[in-house]
Length: 242
Image (cartoon, rainbow, N blue to C red; front, side, top):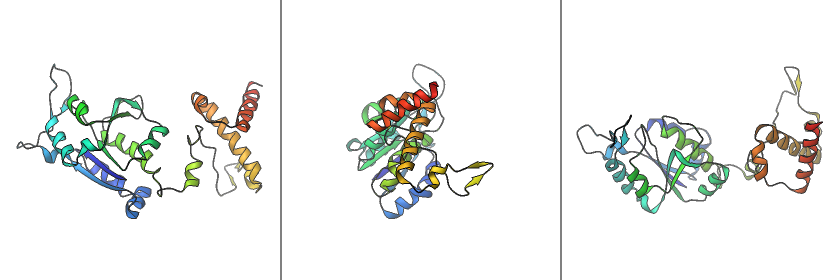
């Protein structure tokens, strides 16, 4: 997968691609990327990329010309262009999975009061919100989306790891433990030390259901539950009522 990021602050994005799992994916050639400072496409003396909004109002709006030229330089109209925005469609794991199947993605990092609407109309395929709140940096939102997407690309992370993650089947992930066996008066659950794979699987299923029900009950209605998990959910509901 190739990723282009259009930004006024390249330094905010660069470290993301040169650290941790992403750095390894880049080294392997699974992910390629390019960071484009669209200020380089402004032609006035001050390299101006923003201006006051028509009709009045607070803040500044990112201008069409520098962004448009930057987007044209990478043939953006023939690619999937994403603009992280609080006005967009809410991002989730299913959306990440869909985007992970693309060969390339383009991200526009907004700032100030956002983009001129004509850039959105002309170039943007997906306006995506990472949550019902406002942040000042489009770079932060873009890297959240990229982080959720690239790790789903084949070869970045093992299939086994992906299968056990939160939301992989609509449920939150079960609790995890490692050494030492006892810490601060708390011990690792006995079942995890038993070596009995069927009992461990059952325990994990139950803990996933319990965690989801307590923390995110609204996602249960969309979760894909087999008969065994439905039965365990009924048991859990009865247990919590009792």
